[in-house]
Length: 157
Image (tube, rainbow, N blue to C red):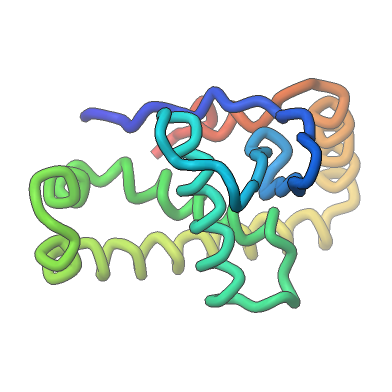
């Protein structure tokens, strides 16, 4: 299975006249309407900016940008584990891939995410000992720098 390369972007200092946009802590990029898109870093920043814009149009302002991006990344990672879908995406134009297994696999991944998150939340809210343990794990995660890379290391599917 071939995986797309992970972003190695780091927060960038603000330049005069531009604003900083952070979707997730590890995905910060500069936005400047005057910059031309030439090098790979600029193309990646433009892609991330467009992604956030599309997610905002889709989900509105009620949900934080960070939460929208994390959700999209979560579903994307679930789909990456489906070799058939990945082969279709990598070997076909979007129009053709959207007529194959991707839509059904995406629906299944969204339902799985909703179910697993709901099950975990229900357990934590109903079992004080589980909640105590989980809050301890959250403390450990909050103390670490750069936990965004843990998304791939936590794959068990």
